Length: 159
Image (cartoon, rainbow, N blue to C red; front, side):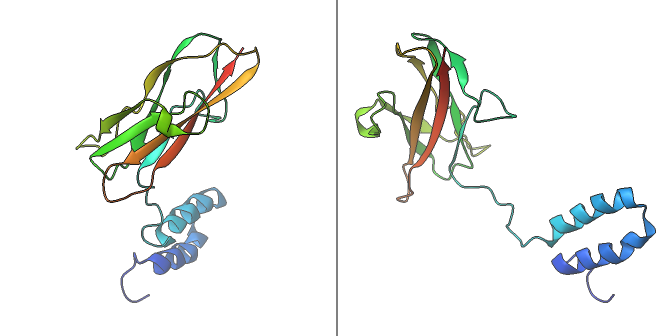
C-alpha cells in the first residue's frame, strides 16, 4: 500500500486486511479502533455552551432526585465548553414557563477549563401531594455575540 498509512479510510482498509493474523476475539476491538480513525474530522466535537444538570443516577439520568415537601435542596448544574465569559442563569422555580419573572444571576466561565462550574442555587421544595414529579427548568443565556439560550431540567420526585 503506497502513501501515508494513517489517513481516515486507508487505516480502516489496512486494519481489515491485517485482521486475518489475529484471533477472532481481538478482531472486534481492532475494528472498533479502526472505525474511530475512519470518522470524519470533527465528528467527536463537543456541543458548545452545553448545560449539564447533575443527575441522581449516572446510570439512568432520567431517574429523579428523591425529596419530600418543604425540603431544602440545591439545584445543580454546569455549563460545559462555555464560549462566553459570562452567562445569566435563571431557574423556573414558579413553574410558569416564563424565566423573565424568576430570580437570575450572572456567572463566569473558568479560564482554564472553559466550563462554568456552578449554575446552581438553593431552593425549597414546595408543599405538593405525595408521589409528585417536579421538573425544574433552567435557562442559561450567553452574554456575548447574540448566542441562543440553552436549557436543562432537574427532576425531583416528592414522596
